[in-house]
Length: 114
Image (cartoon, rainbow, N blue to C red):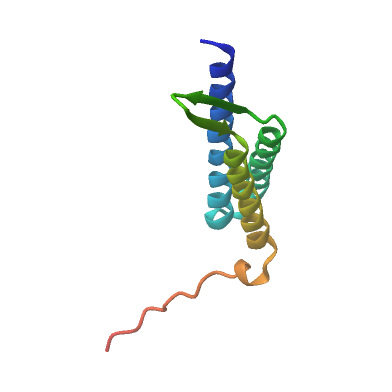
């Protein structure tokens, strides 16, 4: 395996791990209890950290084959990861500090049969 392929595999693994962190953080923030708040913030921060790392260490490659040029730029993938991390952190913080989200949903009381 050459050096470029190794870099692409590492970047893809970091991207998949970041998307997983962002998704799990958003899920725990939306559906989880208060005990998962810290874990959700850590996962959302991990997604943001991986996104920043991917944006700073940009992988760009271009080649011309049979007169047609194509290029690969990793920034677009990590911009999506950045959006995922920001959205997950926003969901977690909104659910934690929004007073309306602290109340339990209304339940229907059972009616007495006559």
